[in-house]
Length: 393
Image (cartoon, rainbow, N blue to C red):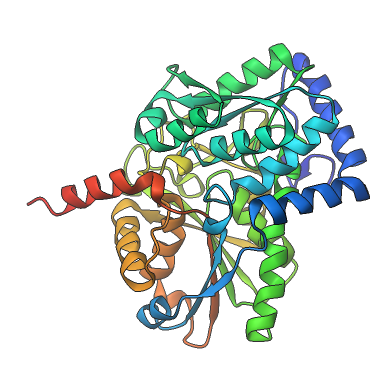
């Protein structure tokens, strides 16, 4: 990788006011991250606060249903309920060592916002979270948790009131206060060095997965399937396997109601390369380069861009871009509930849905790992409401 580039994707497309902050962050990460002190503190927090390593669970009943062996990398068991804490702890600790006093971030499903205030409290930093007004309403339980933990939650009413708009607002805030404040970005998106920093902190998922599957199966998996929008949980699982050509990698987007819908969120199916929030990536945009609206039932997959690294890996054919439609996702939730007694987050259910809906992709003797990125407590009301809609004549 050239500095900040993954093939043609990536870069630092920002105004001058943010260049210094980004260069400062890049220098600090290169200097601080490799040190023995940082590694000891970071991995200590992952272990003693976060609860790592997370288990690799053989889903016996689900495996019987689909006809091949399926393991779940249980990121839902990480403290806070999702993979988001890995990156949040890493960046909060880095920000503290940089002398920052405050964290700001964006969130959609609320899991990253929750992880950020948790990490901020652990590191003694104030936290402010920007959240689209629509996401504030549909993720009310996570908003309550963030407020209880002491975060200031700022609803964003601009634009469509979703994740894209929250990111824009957070970048504007950071431009005004970067000397004292760190923008703890939640996914592998944005200007360099954010995509590399987030992917590095999330790689603990794949590092553990590799050791665990070798212990359980004596070999590497045949496939790893992960949901994604910006790509943090997917790259976290994929990175230690990218050079292993025998391991197939599947990236599952939110398809929305249908691929043909004007607001489908399947950027790899319907998008094109463009600049969004400081980085060149695959983007849902019209012929004039204006960002197209996107919609899925999963708030965390409603970002119109795909991070530069995942964009590159899909373009060169190392990762297969896929999508799951809303009705497939709710079926997957039901099947995971009934077979394994687990309620997946709606984001995570996209990966489950792809495996459930495409059994011909896999052979009977395949070992398939689903990165089970989060639990569905936050989505129970949405799931039940949609169940009623689907069952209404």
